[in-house]
Length: 331
Image (cartoon, rainbow, N blue to C red; front, side, top):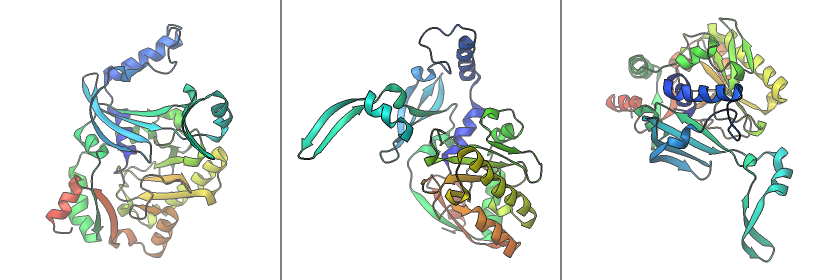
């Protein structure tokens, strides 16, 4: 499953102690009691983080997932190097220090020490972290599952129904109880409406890695498998108004967008991904992503398309659903 669900679950499941510490820091600043040199947004809650294990890391993606303890509770901290922005190049070149490592003819390599404001590390904290979170971020082998319509009814759907997959954080967004300031666009219609907001994987500092999520107002659509022609107005509304909102806010035309759904999704409430074409967003591969334009056309051609179609998707080695497919001898 994608990282974004676990990250958002952290917002709704965060401890009172952790939340209160952040609130206190903000209140101190607003009341003029923050003191010189304090961050106006938040105290350093990671100063007490105790590392127990590195779950996974990627030199290519410049990130690391760390397990540990925070305020006495299990936590996962995700560190990601932020992209270099074109509008910061002049300051980067003029305000950095260079340490020569090697020079040979026309080639030379250096260690560049950038100004602090240009050397940020995006940090996501999941606390309290469950064993499910830990397994989600741990490096594991994946397997491609072949799911027929019958498999969905006999294996996948019963598994989903028995699990306690919380989507309270989704309801919080729809009910304006959380992330209100992050909303890019909203259509409140209960049937065809949706909320569009940035995914946590995007730091919103450049459009090259734009990543938005459109969350449907309807609450009874779990995934691609539930879609029927009656949902076409909703899908078409998300597709059209979502593209218009991105154009208005970020000046990106539809021809530069990848708009798709995941199957399996990372959480069971209908949502659509909007990313910039060319950005290799996690989960945008053919084994998991389904273009929204194709989904609409498939439902127009065959009302039972997603009830009967064989779908393929990857599952990690420790995923409980994978175990169910193995038990049924379908893998």
